[in-house]
Length: 471
Image (cartoon, rainbow, N blue to C red; front, side, top):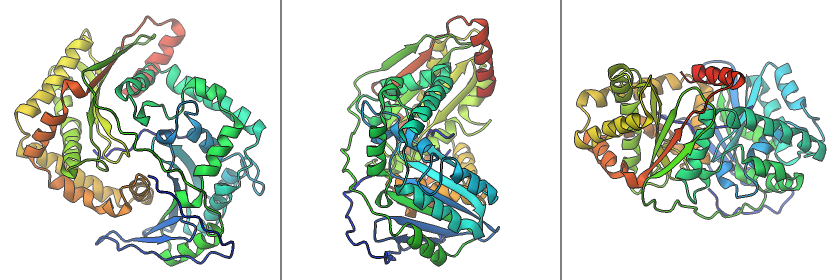
């Protein structure tokens, strides 16, 4: 149920500048952890947050640096720039040439990667706990010291453009989803693709990248999350040593950029060569951060689980196994997004079923919930899944770090980490019915349809591979 924003892998307040160049003396602004959370919270004098969760089950550690910047921070003309910098972060500093970062981590038995989302960019390593200092040393170096060579940029932007062609332009379903977002949102920054529009990638310059990097990739716009077999006090000392001397930047105060009220169904048709049609339906819904009533956000989360929570969920039971009018169908809701989002339904029609028939069937499923609250058994099933999933997740240091990093960087606060299960368990059938009635209306609906054109032999092979992957 709990969703993570779509990401590309390979919240702002005006920052207070720290003028002194003397060795940083950390400020141990330690938050009061919720019972059982175990998170230790610190803040360095330059504004950087440090969050540590000790987990001594294995001699490993996960280190993550989260920046409060992503696709939703960008404006027309520079879309995709955060993702470009994710790539450039591996292209070298004066101390460590291009490729050296990854080489050093691998030589020490670790793994590393990064991703860019709409609301944040994160860089992470998983390594033996006695090698944590190495990770912090490398991350602190590239936080403020990237070379950002013009030649490296010109090579890497071509790599990114090819990535866009392969993952979006040549993927009928991904292209349809991109066009869906562009129509569903009018003035919300979520209308832009994370990877950027091709025209913006064509005109992006190294000076654009340098300006973006200097502004956003700074200690006072970053959170270090460390989870694993470590001492929180030791992590703080290391963070102070390596990140403490870094200068902060002036972080712009962003405008709210709230989505305007929708006044009727919005539709988009995408006609490209493809094997099968594809349907996307999205209803504008509030998210936890912005909801006037946070109970509504958790009720929408439960509703997502009722519709698409495994083989016994309503959509699979009724439309795939029951009426057999869809080969696949899913529902998703992004509880932790920074901006109001959409509750999304994705479906592929089966056999000769038309997209219109499938859309009508999905609407009928929603009407059923609007007219009849879910049964006690249904709610119990979803809540049991939540508890089981939460218990399983506690064994993953990486997932725990992700959870802490997302909550903190999206502006919700890491303290909400442990409320999820209790808040979901508190949702009632009446609340689920209420949010279905309030938000599943045509005035909030956007529909995107992939209308397949005939395939030639080359595109047929690509489409078949994509369709097999989707199933």
